[in-house]
Length: 359
Image 1: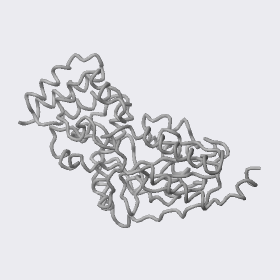
Image 2: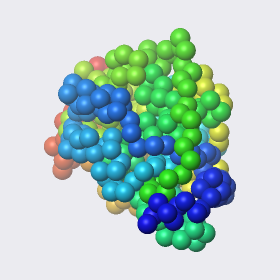
Image 3: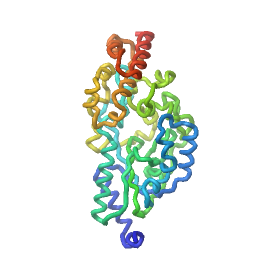
Image 4: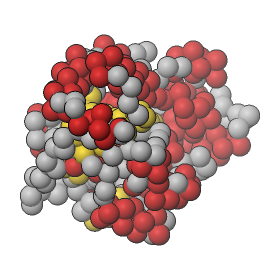
C-alpha cells in the first residue's frame, strides 16, 4: 500500500520542500542517500578487528547495525543527511589559544550548547513539517549517538567526501559542521555521491599531535586526543600526555591545517555561540571549579557528558604541560588529595612535571 501511495506523490517536490525547510532551520545543506554501503561496512569491520576503537565498546556491540540503517529502523529505504555549520567566528582564534599553554583549549564544536539537542530538535521539526504536508510516513531521527555511519551516508548524499583525517569535507564549506540523519521509508530521489578532493594533500597526517592518523583514511582512536579526553574513561596513557598539550576537551589540529577550511562557514544557529568563556579560559581557574560549578556551567553543553572527574583529569594533564608557575602548582596542590583516585594520579604526574620543567 505504501508504494502505491508514494506513486501518486511528487517526491521531487517533497525533496525540494525538505531542502527549503532545512535551510530555514539553520542547516547548511541536505541530501538523500540510499542504504547500501558495503565497502564502508568492510572498512568498519577491519577497523574494529584492529582494536582501533579502544574503550568504545559500543562500536563493536552494535556490529553491522551501524552500517545497515534498515536494521536500526525497519522499513528504511533512504537516509536524509543534513549538515549544520558550527564554526564560532566570535571565539578566540584557535591557533592563538593553542600557542598559549597557560590557557585551556576546548574543541570549537563544543563552545556552545549541546549540538545533539540542537540537531535532534531541528530534524524532528523538519520531519513534522513534512508530515503536515504529505501525511504520516515512517522515520527516525539520528544524531551522533545512534549507531549510524553518518559520514558514509553524508558522502553518498552529496554533502562531502571523507578526508584523509576521516572527517567529512565539503568543497563549499570545509569540515566544521555537524551531521544528522532522518532514516525514512520515503523513497525520495537520490543525490549523486560526492567525489573526493584531497588530492596529494596530506597536511592533516603530520599535524596530529599524537600520530593518531596512522595512514590516509585510517584513525587509531586510541591515540586520538578527542578520544582520550572524551571517550576514554580510565587513565590517559603516560606516553601520550605530553602531546596533549593544553587540549582539555577534543582536538581540532587536523582540521585547522586543512586548506578546505578556508571556506568554512560561520555558525548561523544562535546556540552555537560561545558560553562561559570556554574559548580561552585559564587552566588554574577551570581546575578550581567545584563539581557544583562544573554542573552549573556545563549543563546543556556537549562537555557535560564527560563529567567532572574526566574534566578534572584532562585539566590536570594540561597543567602538567603548562609553563612552570606558582599558581599552576598551587592549583594542583589544592587537589592532591582529591576524592577520585583517577584525578589524584594525574595531579601527581602534573606536579612532578611542574617540578621538572623549566621556568
